Image 1: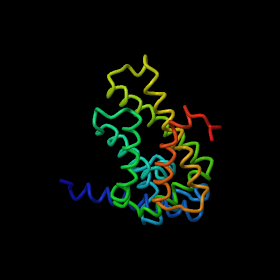
Image 2: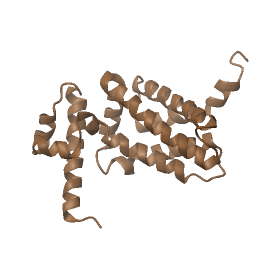
Image 3: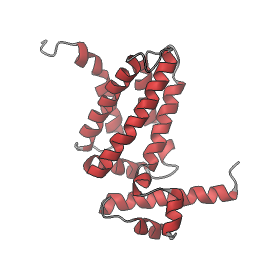
Length: 208
């Protein structure tokens, strides 16, 4: 059971995340300072750094939660599922469950605004790609374990993850530049683009 001290620390961290995301999405990531985030929660800069190494960590705090949820979902998929189907089901179920995952910390609408902002902020996009590469390594290892292969000797786990990650990047880019920024829209694009992987890779694009 969570102690009073642990609850207080969790609530302070969550308040800092909410304040950071609100400031980032209203006035810009680069223009927001750590002092402003701390002041919004009525804590000191020193307190902020007890929870986060810097602005970047605060910016990606909720996304780290969703990525951890995805990794857990992949790990929990039935062993009989082919690797790409396991990834597909895990990510779609992740979008279905995201309200429960995210709203314990911030409103989903704020999370989606921040998600969209990452695409248009070079420093955040670079950090997002770097962090995603680390998650992809983890997922490749999970697939290798599921399938009973050596991730370093068999290229298939990394190839599967590379294809999957490419689809997610296309989805993120298309969603962030579209007109519908809803949760349903990004979930729908994810499903549609994953369904096109097979035909795109093996089909005849010029067929009538």
